[in-house]
Length: 114
Image (tube, rainbow, N blue to C red; front, side, top):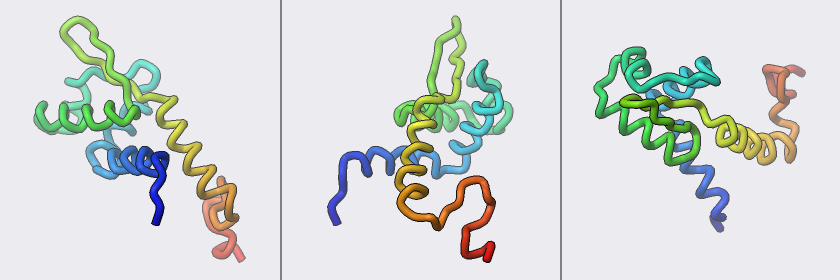
């Protein structure tokens, strides 16, 4: 199988979201968009050690799924809408325009509805 650079790039982004803590971080940041949250707020919500949170935030930041901004002594994190939209665009282009098996907005595939 031939792997393209594009496939590798998206695979690492999906891998970053493949951890439940990271997915929860993104969900919270999307809910808090556009203001985002400081690291301490995220840590308190998730109830995990600061070092563990830092590891997960770094993984999401490296993949362009969240942004980090310094506010004095604090780091504020926001969902990177461009990076997340890029990921959704990839899914849509690869999965939903080549085959009708996934119907956007219908809640079920065409075969299940029939």
